[in-house]
Length: 274
Image (tube, rainbow, N blue to C red):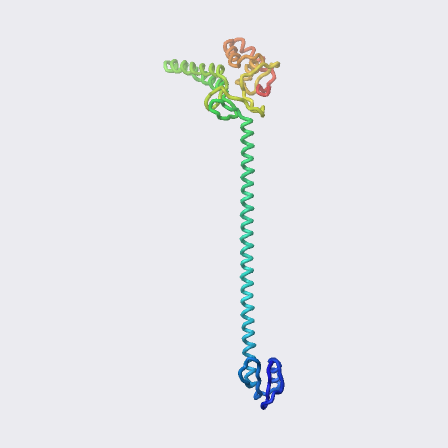
């Protein structure tokens, strides 16, 4: 509160805002004096207005600085919060991507394991080289190329001297191949070992191994060289197919008559399927 005096007499006590307002209205004069607690002497009212304006200005500036500092602090806090949220989102995205990658790797590994087990279950297993394979080497498949080799080498006999040497040699080699194709057992394609096990689950992987006895006489569709008569007859009798073919070759006269009749009369069927 201000104590105001005029001509040495106190005229009242006023608050600073009221004193400034009354001074502006003319109720109080600039020649009046005022005093408030903390002052050492009385001062003219004319200086109160300027002093109050400076104080108000300082307060406004201080308030503006505080508001600016608060705004900057708020902006910094919001930025820090946004950065923290962005880092959290990135971490969650990275963790999600890692989980998805791990899940994809697990699915791929599981698919590879199932495929490996299925392949192993449906494959032959060699007990010598430990290599799996889908189909053993069947020596009877060499009979057809050996027969053609025998035929083409026999053509060398037409050529004098050189053909009389090369022809019998080639024919002898082809004959050995034909004999071997009927005497050897199916074997591993890698090491040619006959010590291997069959698939346990899928019967469609059964090889064309030495055939057994069939109650029906038919022509073979999957082991045929000409009409499949010898292969079907071997499966019907239980003999080795090479023995039956050799018997037909040795009995040429009878074979020329019997073979076409059986070709026409016997139905065609898969030896593997039976």
